[in-house]
Image (tube, rainbow, N blue to C red; front, side, top):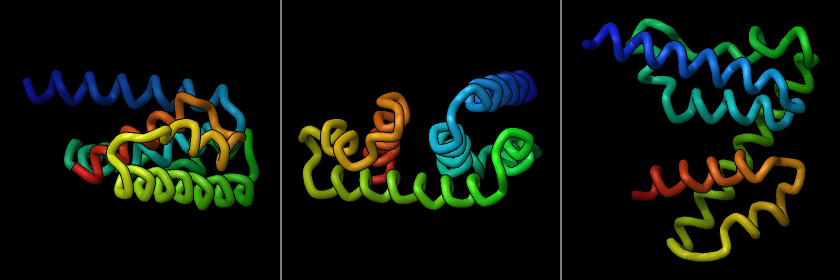
Length: 120
């Protein structure tokens, strides 16, 4: 059963990586950065290791673009966490969208979900 769960996790992870490769640099890096932030320790426990964002996206985007996008992803996650910390309920998606309009609603919603998880 443990091996089956590991294989399912590996398939889901690979699917997320492939989907991220179809996105612009900010959204692609955000997807992989959030996966590492939220599930990275599980990947390490399963022997997979963290997703190497530069390796996965380096053929499409420059190192500089990827590093800049990582910092911006961290800003989105931190801002979302602060929103949720201040008020459990609220127009969080609208506030994030106003501040980080270059990100997809899917990624902004994921940031909010992660913020709730962090602040539970």
